[in-house]
Structures are given as structure tokens and as C-alpha cells.
Length: 159
Image (cartoon, rainbow, N blue to C red):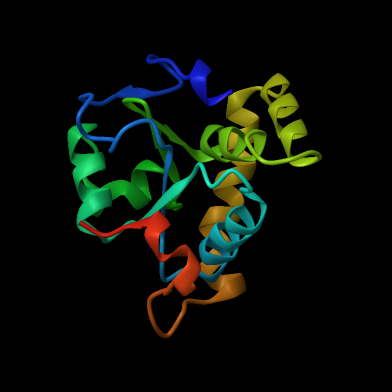
């Protein structure tokens, strides 16, 4: 699935040298319990260790987003209150499309998330934004920034 990413409505093109090779990078809010839970969920199921991760406030995330002409300071409003993006092979995917593309690369049954593309994007993104806009009210915020387990630290980009 990730090989099929393309520019246009589904992704914003990035310069080729920005994405540290072919590894897809998940950009996330490291202060958000729901976002951190999602990262841990992906880490446990990404048996091929294909995904890399970058905290939204890290230099690595800023570099990726700057090259896509997305201001990291305003990404919360750009993403409808959320802070999840997928950067892969010169493209940035956001909201429901990012989640679907990530899940589609995980083992069954999560691969079935690709079927959600049959749902109109405006509906998918509406549901996504409804959850994202309430995540701090429901789950609060972390007292400290997420720190990955030692075995996973090499998968987190910081600079």
C-alpha cells in the first residue's frame, strides 16, 4: 500500500532528500495520551519494523513538515485539531488517510482498514476530527513527553 502513495489530493510532495530514505515516518503529538497509545499500538504490531516516528515538536518532524510547506506551529489547525501525519516517499498524508495508510501496513485484521477508503473522505475526516478535537478533554495530556522503550529508540527521529 505505501508504495502506491502519490501526490495530489492524497499527499503533498516533499523533496526526495527529506525523508531519510524509504521508511515511512509517523509524526505525532508526544504529549497526547491517545497519540502515544496509537504509536505504541503500531510499535507492537509493526513486525517488519518499517515505521519510524517523530514527535511533532522534534527537529525531524519540523524538517519534514517545513519541506511540505506545513508550518509545524499551525499543524493542529491544519489537521483539524489533531497531530498525526504520515510522511513517506516525498508525500505527507493527514487525518483519516494517514491512519488508514498506517493500519493497512499492519497485520490482519488491521489491513482491512484500507476498505475504509470506500467511505467518502469528508465523512472519514469528520469522524477523525471529532475524536481529535475531544482527545484532550477525554484523555487529558501527559505530564511529560513520551519516551520510547530502549529497544524502540532507534525508530524515533529526533534531529
